[in-house]
Length: 162
Ligand SMILES: CCCCC/C=C\C/C=C\C/C=C\C/C=C\CCCC(=O)SCCNC(=O)CCNC(=O)[C@H](O)C(C)(C)COP(=O)(O)OP(=O)(O)OC[C@H]1O[C@@H](n2cnc3c(N)ncnc32)[C@H](O)[C@@H]1OP(=O)(O)O
Image (cartoon, rainbow, N blue to C red; front, side, top):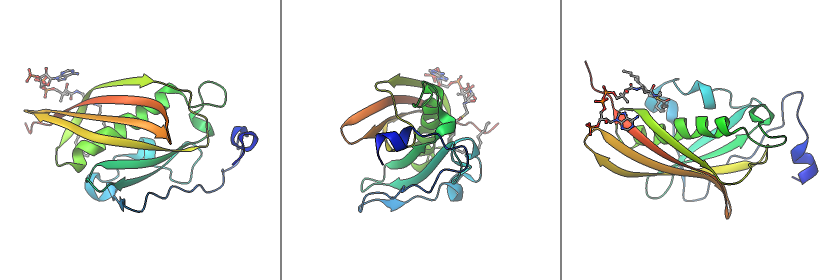
């Protein structure tokens, strides 16, 4: 896609995008694990906001291919920081669930490193860093090739049944 095309805002539904993963990744069925509770980010897979597809890599870490559509716009032609934070909240929280922890997100720090152009497929790479008591630390970054758009550090807290 040329830069000129990428900047064009879709007033109707944008065309399909290629969210396929790398050859070594396997599909990850998020709804099978957590039900329909991820609608905020991944609830409209053909819409103009986010389009997301989940995978596990060879080390079983969660990966996501994500397209930030025109409805995530913040700075002209680029993704709103809050849209990236929402993506980190969902994907890093889901990464902890995928690793076997029943959690909510207690704290999320996001560093915005580069403006993210709209309508570009990027990758969110996650990694469960540590698990100490109820605290599960998950790190991630939104990137494409060598470019890192944002980094996230997510403290997840396991839910205590009352
Ligand atoms: C009961 C609700 C159940 C909801 C979930 C149920 C089912 C979900 C099913 C499927 C899930 C689907 C998808 C999951 C994937 C993504 C989810 C998206 C992520 C989210 O969108 S999720 C919503 C946003 N999320 C919240 O809405 C959290 C609101 N909040 C709370 O629910 C409490 O605040 C909680 C539980 C976090 C802690 O409360 P608590 O009373 O259980 O535990 P306590 O306060 O004692 O903390 C224990 C130790 O964690 C440390 N600690 C706690 N918070 C910290 C912080 N912020 N910074 C640094 N350290 C912190 C303490 O310092 C202590 O550490 P120490 O033990 O060393 O003293």
